[in-house]
Image (cartoon, rainbow over all chains, first blue to last red; front, side, top):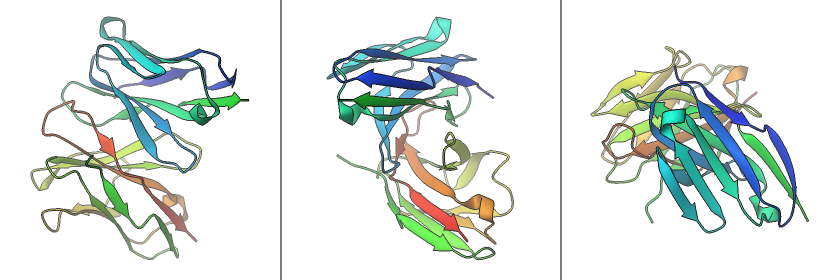
Amino acid sequence: GIQVEQSPPDLILQEGANSTLRCNFSDSVNNLQWFHQNPWGQLINLFYIPSGTKQNGRLSATTVATERYSLLYISSSQTTDSGVYFCAATYYGNNRLAFGKGNQVVVIP
Amino acid sequence: EPEVTQTPSHQVTQMGQEVILRCVPISNHLYFYWYRQILGQKVEFLVSFYNNEISEKSEIFDDQFSVERPDGSNFTLKIRSTKLEDSAMYFCASSKPTTGGEQFFGPGTRLTVL
């Protein structure tokens, strides 16, 4: 199956800093999603981005499908951005999302 | 905004007991999924369901597990004879009937097997 690798595994940020999270995937994808897992364990949809660039407030994401990677940008980080960010993808022919191990982000005031 | 709902939010059971986890997918979605996340690990696919039958399942989804759409709104995961290692967060998700469509996740059911 498809392999999804995320980096860095852990990141500590000062409030107000910017950061970039990376997701590499091993095959052509027809779905690429970014999630934020909050302290209660809920998976919050951030982006559905199999290709191209999207922005939502202080967050933006870019997927370069031909080079098999996606980036999540967090600008002007806030303490509420803390948590685990997951990248997940499906490849053509099926609908099972394969998740990466996540990026653990801690934003300190 | 429509959302996936799950009940219960927490379930504690004794080893060997059967549990049923319930989900109400988004109403115009036709693909349904179950995933699980063991504490501290990544989220793993269990099964997908479309047109009243299983469309894909992982190697985790063995004879201990079953899924059902008992009516027009609910989607259930049954775990027979629970084991300690079944303790995990179980997520239900749904998507529109397109391959590669965006999947929307419920808040999860935290299952603890004692």
